[in-house]
Length: 265
Image 1 (cartoon, rainbow, N blue to C red):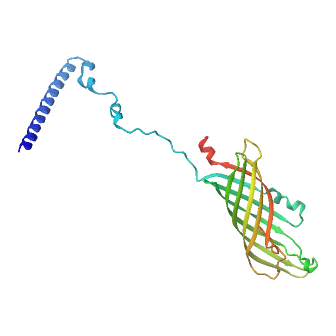
Image 2: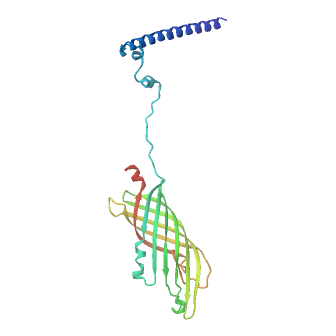
Image 3: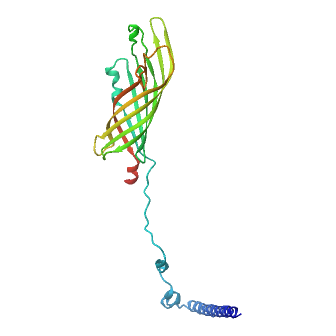
């Protein structure tokens, strides 16, 4: 009972205090309106709210808040660099290898964590001779190919990069068997894997132009059966009679960096 009486007494005191406060506020407001209507401008310094109110309420709360430094997040794009490779030596093959044409381009997509996807493809045309038939039969082959490789990148310094990767290749080509009387075209497909090592160096310090050298090992996985044995060349792979083909390919590359553009606009 005593607890309830104490609560009731406190409630009555609070109601009485609020009643007196609102009565004084109303009377003061009416008096202020009369003074304004009579042309009197009140002194703002004398107003109780002006004296008591704090200009920065957050400053009063700052001791009770945990302050944390605001750190802007660093933007890292999913694809950081794109490089376009031109295998220039293969484009020059028609000038010193008669009957051979080879056109190849490559694009590498550099992701975060030093991993990149390298895709290269092209068109090739060969005219080798079948030595077993006294050079009377020619087995020309021509077609397109595409190779995709997943590579790991070592950035040795700001000028030099090295790569190691493994990839899968596909070739769709045509063989044409000709002799004095007949011409027999055959449409074939082949699948192969490639392991490649490469290194490159920035040719000009303040540019995106690189020069590099790639060493590739290729192994034939599947080739459609035909009547020519192994006396022909598969575009993108090489001579069928070799179980493993290797090639050394110089190239130039132009790189576009999305990371540098974001950090240094």
